Length: 324
Image (spheres, rainbow, N blue to C red):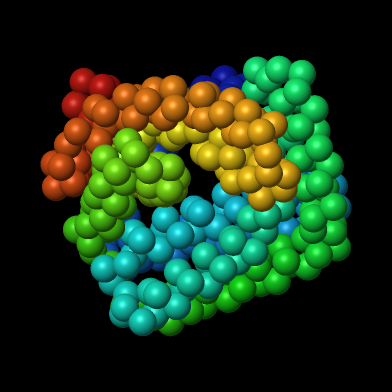
């Protein structure tokens, strides 16, 4: 409290807070990209968070088994994406071992995911009465092969524990620092795989599914980088995310086709049902590939340079007139 000359007290306004006290040191985000030890710490923390998200999802299985499986698989896909960002800094043997552990943990509940998605995807198809009857028969037959809830719960718990163990393995295998250039190379590698798969996806459902997986991982990688950078990097991430949204219905139909073939009874009605799936699938595959044309038109090196420029713009000091 300040005192006036007549002895009365009055409240003085607080002193102005410097901009670097409000926001941290101006340009402070550059610490992640310019400090190789800090970049390592940040990326390991992101990997750990993904593994913990898989654990949290596995713990929620009693509330909603389908949602638990979905969130668990999504978390492990993000962990795989982060592993690729760090791949250039890891010994090959360690990288392969961690990747294999994540893949096996995710694939263990693949059947549970298919059983969750198939009914909704089948229900959305425009089917005739005969095909609709067969679709119900397929779902009834599949229900008998559905993994028991307790089995799914155990698979989730075991997979989550295995994913968490990879955090320690990653920490032990990484050198003391990670360079920004090596991270960009990881992004480029994912982009290159996605771009190659998109070309092959014109005639291959398997390659389309691969394109979707790599695109999802690319989106996760860009999401992490944008979180350290800002709006310009986020713009690149949103473009990729738009492509993955178009891919989603296609992947569900590809899964459904395999699901119907696995659980359906061979014969003319089954052929009609598969034809209905294929009719939808062909058009959606074309639409998705068209939606991804511009994003994947660049070569990997150019895409990497675009990302580096976006991050540099995000981290550039604000003009003096914007800080006043």
